[in-house]
Image (cartoon, rainbow over all chains, first blue to last red; front, side):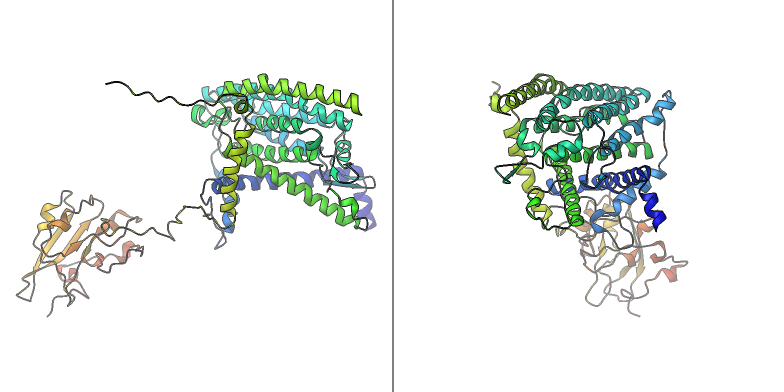
Length: 357
Length: 192
């Protein structure tokens, strides 16, 4: 028992355990669940039932067995490779997006720290700058897949993806400048703790959405564009370029692209929750002073998960609400509207802080 | 002829280029549908097909059946009208002497190759005795082997059960070895 506690107190062991928890028990299950939930929720919006036929014995569970069925199917499918493709790049491309998607969870805290133990894999000083670096890496997944497939459609998809993601990367950073200025840090834990403050005594929590409403809109738009999902799904462009950059993939590698997309959805939800909705902080919980510490952590984790699920749902709902942008419209929206807006937001925030604070 | 031109009212403008009001209006619609269907599937129009089947119109031309008289005999008098009129040449009748002299003939074999049938309904129209009908309401005939589609007299069951999905396997089919064996065994037997 003592030995176990000693092993658990080693920082490296703790970090490994945290990584296993965040990825194996949080990000991946949610991402996998999203593959089914996207279909079920889409069905509900469109007055359909959605997948409900796969079964284990007589158990259907409203389509839960489809997750296992789809996984099994893609494992046993042939992994094809088009003639004349760049073998090495073709084989590694799917995992760029997946790794980039998962890396977001490295800096997302899911509950308040107990003593020196943080519920966060790493709380590095650059914080969100790390996220910018990593998400720009996910461009490589799309570009390499498009370039190495030896297919015109895939190449078109890859170029579209790179142009779109690099453009939206620009003001994704600028949109967060306001957050950095308001909470005075790029470190995620400090931004989250900054949102635990209140206005008017303890009436309104100082959440990012209230301090930076425009920043929230811009950042969410940029992140949705980064995930290459509707309404910014020109890189996949089902009706024009079939499936875009991952057109030639099949089997498990295709599933890796899909899983990367869904993990990215969960990642977007986690980031938006952390930066604009108080992260794990449950508002007004400090008023209940006698709350046991473990219950507070459980409530915080529950609140965080609830918000993450809500924003996952929000992104699916967005897909069926907003019609797809044409590619030039995507570019025009990014460079002509959102970039000036995010610059204006940065300047305005700076001016307000300078004058009033 | 002068072409008619319809001017479409464009709604460009500042409010429209903000996107947000339009997106909000859209969300009101999609979210309403989502929650109505989340709690009780109120708007869902899906028919859960194999378990749940839409009622078939009484005029639907489905699988054939041979009707019977009140005493159980086949109404068919083996007049070959349907076999003659059939454009797909999928009906084959072997006539036999009926012991009842007032009936004269009856079909010893009445085979329909459902794979060749085009479901035109001409056999039903041609029949002078209302002996063949297509009102079983069976809309899907999907079987595992080609020979299953050769329906013989006994498989053209006469019970009208629109919702029963009958599935015939190869072993359900009679495989007569001789003319005597091909004679039907239960209902529809001519009186001795």
